[in-house]
Length: 407
View 1 (cartoon, rainbow, N blue to C red):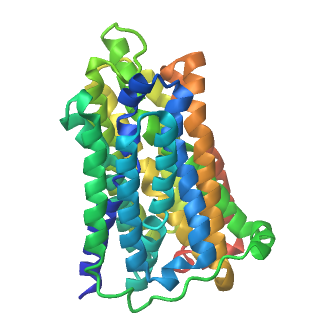
View 2: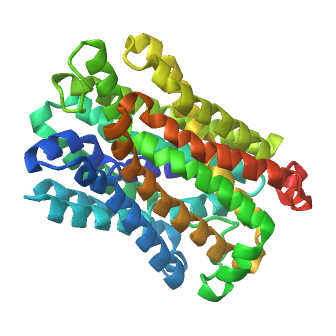
């Protein structure tokens, strides 16, 4: 089997396997009404996945599960567990059980996402950045898919969104088993070690790459999580029905818009992977964050206007907000000492996903004070920090280690 065919299979498997991530978020307005959730309680449906993902990533790294079971088997088993956990959410009778199931979903998806990256690295060497960018694009599209299902089904049929996501994850796990092995360039994962964390933190070049990643993550998941609510509030203002809460009769339209805005990030991920290898990681990440940060700052100007006016800006935002995602982990893998790469990548991922919990909770708090119109502007703080970090890294001698000397 050729590497490109493996990548196609792997991308399809990851697209299907990651559907549970935003499955509950896509039906959050219905759950909020059913369980009388506050905005903080609604945010917990997504942030619990982030926390579960961090816990799962740490356990997987410490136990080197992708070496013990092979990356393919780990992805398949984890996708099946994510499917079970998603069905658990559908069967929940209250928020406490649902949040617990969502935590388990995140922990399971930690066995789908990073091992999928390892599989891509095992089949590609020269075009690794492009391959991983393609895979992140598939993950992005898979994460957006529940919003499409939410748009298709009636508002009262919210369990169907979770059921489709669970079925999708099972199919993705079966599909990845068709890949014959972990690839000709597969290598054992460098073990995670708490004792080397201080050395990684003190490494100036790795620290700057991590700061760039944190700036990116400050914006990414909060934008994805609250996009439907933002669009619903904009449409409500346009129609003169108030600020909007995402659970109005027009809620199906925000779901479709969110699917398109998040899903178009697949194009951005592919472009980021392609040009990160050709033009340099610091250049691609900086320009992606400049674009996304500007979108966060200016989207309020178009708030409450016609959707056809707002939509082009949202599409640019959707492409740019995730275009740099794969480049940060690739940069750390190139900058960190090879014996510490596993620890460095796990540390980066854990800190990034923990930070997303902050902004997922922060945005509705900000909106309660200043309204949804300008709430997204606080997300621009992250890209501003990220651009500074990556441009500082670009001027350092270690930048020669990135993208074959392109920085």
